[in-house]
Length: 163
Image 1 (spheres, rainbow, N blue to C red):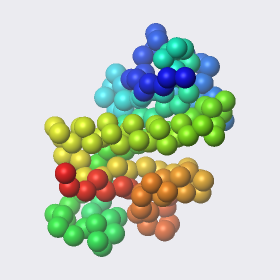
Image 2 (image 1 turned 135 degrees about the vertical axis):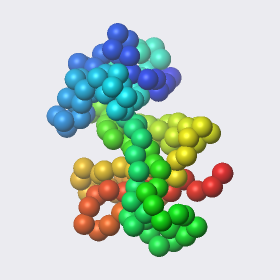
Image 3 (image 1 turned 90 degrees about the vertical axis):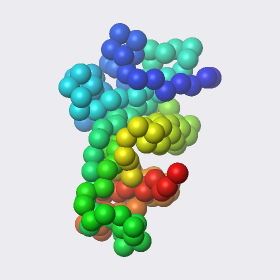
Image 4 (image 1 turned 180 degrees about the vertical axis):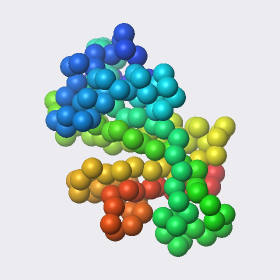
């Protein structure tokens, strides 16, 4: 099975057949992702098999964001100006129930980070921001180096460091 991550295209990708087991994430892909792209709110990327490109195995959305300077750890604030830090938000992130346990979440996250690092060539981006929906999602992100903004929320960030 050969996999590819592509920008969501309504005519190419079957959004109605996707089910991640979380209705708000299913609904976002099916009804809002295309509208958000047109309006410049977020861009959604889908993971597909190249042999069956209409079948979506997972997806994520990216949008511009900022992170309050005060939400960074003391060590991460070092050397930064004391104003909001430019970031990219991974706003929605889901894998199909039928493909769970195959490492697709890690593959999607790697692809998102690679895409964000590429964007740094033309745009100031210091961190990646996510909102973990539950403790399992929080642990997933923490495993890859994301840090909690504060113990009262599930907002996490990953500093991208210097090139």
